Length: 274
Image 1: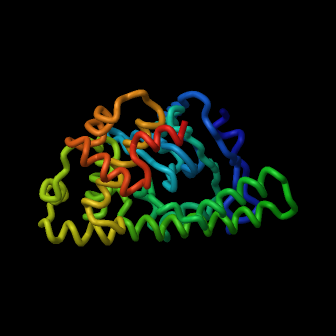
Image 2: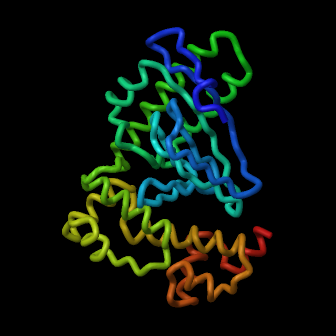
């Protein structure tokens, strides 16, 4: 892929220029490594599955509804795994206005943003891809306007849910969430989570619920159930093994919680998916 020759010059200092965009569904593991990054900005929106993002010594898993933002020169290292049917939208863009937009929207320290599967974000991104690739009249201005809206929505979500990668409380919450998603079978107690975030248990619980929209216990339980569903879908493991791998020490408790959350027993869910 060309890193500079495919970057167009904007006709206006007030437009965000789309260089290329599209939709990608992987039929094999796709690992993108660009140690020196690109010369333009890049947005990746995870529609389905996962995107595993490595930034230095940190590894974050972006799930459906998450956005990844790379700036010019940022090292890019991300994996789209086949086994979870990963599907993404991607947009490369530039323009002299971009630096100011990222400053105004406080997106310079943001890498992964959970949009809570905001349907407005996904619709706007899909329209950019459609209008740009159809080559409709005035596509530059139309796509630029849509891109401004996308970045504004992402900024709202980033600073509402504490996704910026800094030393703030939001940053610690974001790091904790990534750990829970990556290793859901670890024994995360609320006290240990609060200690990890350098907060009191009561303050941590308040901040976490405001950030995520659920209590720590509810969120951990949700992630564990999602992990169990993946294992039921894509592996031949026994229900007992899946319960343990998902963080449930008691198989009967796992079966009760799974049925309460999903509406089917683990065995029924596996059969229905097949």
